[in-house]
Length: 99
Image (cartoon, rainbow, N blue to C red):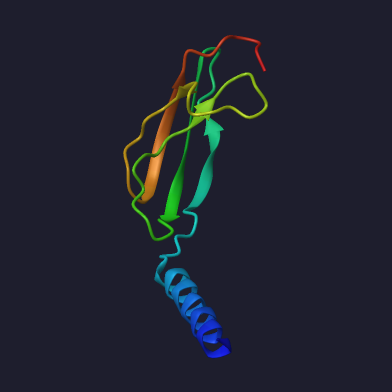
């Protein structure tokens, strides 16, 4: 009985080890943002540079903004292509004197 239990424990250990080692690790892409420029009362220009895709395809690039502390991509955003490299974002529709 003890040999059967040891066998099942070993089998479970090997199954878990195989599952863990078969998972592909994907790192986070590396992004450097560009300083905001060309600021007017209703628009601005910014962007960034994705220098490393982190092991996965970069499917969208852009900038999101809003009046909340942490704007989300469900709100105002630009769509500036995909993949690694430099991109420029034109932010429009801003309201004067709004932070």
